[in-house]
Length: 83
Image (cartoon, rainbow, N blue to C red; front, side):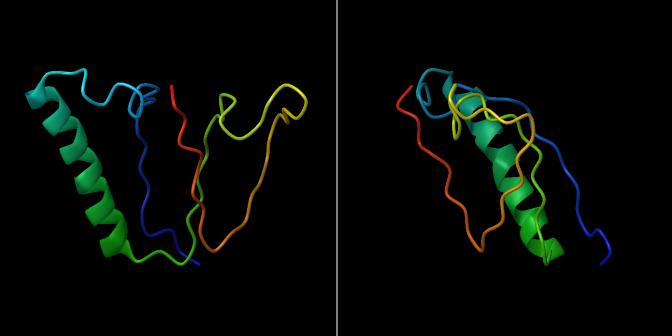
């Protein structure tokens, strides 16, 4: 299976908690970048998506903190943190 698309995005810990904090023009540029990424990924029509990410307590906690984890799903919806 050939690789059809690759990308990376910056770490944005406040994207959910402080969505209204940045100036409007900065927020528009930020979300425009994600819109572009979505369009490019959709156009590539991948069969499989591999995401490499640090969890930062989003899906694991101190009693279950593996060095690496591999998940498999038809769909995945991450937690929506209130912070």
